[in-house]
Length: 91
Image 1 (cartoon, rainbow, N blue to C red):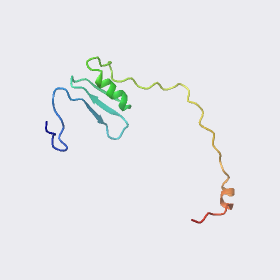
Image 2 (cartoon, rainbow, N blue to C red):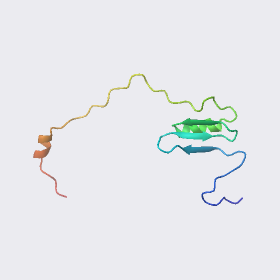
Image 3 (cartoon, rainbow, N blue to C red):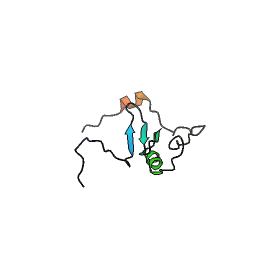
Image 4 (cartoon, rainbow, N blue to C red):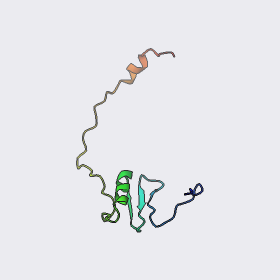
């Protein structure tokens, strides 16, 4: 079996494709049967493609977003005046 030349797009009856949509975090998957779907998770996209011929309608399932987001983690805010009084460390 010989490999195609560099930058040559594979063709054939059983080729699956996942393309990145420039300017976004989205992927477009296309099955050899002609079914297409968009999603953000590459793993879910490949699972959807490899489920041929039983593709779920509409593409891969999107992750569930909670209605209420958890509070952000606690952090410490330093006073800029205290930071300016510190002795610089020379390297």
